[in-house]
Image (cartoon, rainbow, N blue to C red):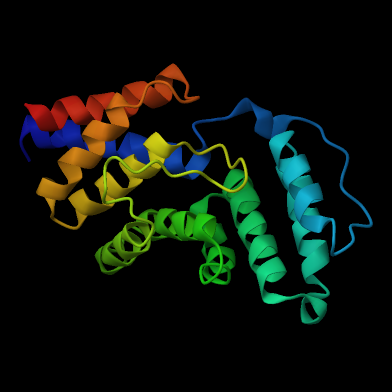
Length: 210
């Protein structure tokens, strides 16, 4: 393996670790009172309130508690709850543990499609890369000018979603499609993103431009 390829793989691994762990977001350790007695009607909003406060375990309790009455829920509410449970699981256990939840929400939740694409990447199974690409292309993310907006604040940015698609393209052997995604991800500097996040994406962009 050439030095350049080693650098690229190192950068891709760094991005993968970031996607799996949230880059060590300190809010994971925040103490938030467990959400109790969550009704079906308020479960989604209660869960996301806990999530945005850094109470990912509490958010999981909120979403999962409402899903105990799954038979009484309409399809859209179930999708919203499974999507929330998926993202809360990502924060506590990583994408590999969240795939089953995202899978149950992808028909009615675009945010769950992004999460499922993250799951497909986390498997590092070549058969899954094209599945992730299909989900993200279905959201028009192959268009580098498209700005993806999450319905809820997952903590993942538009730049990271484009970077995710770029990595999937690259691993699927399509460098021509990967490069524009890395480039647009590196150029998005006005959205909330830590310097470390930007440096990872920008480093990948630089590596491919040489």
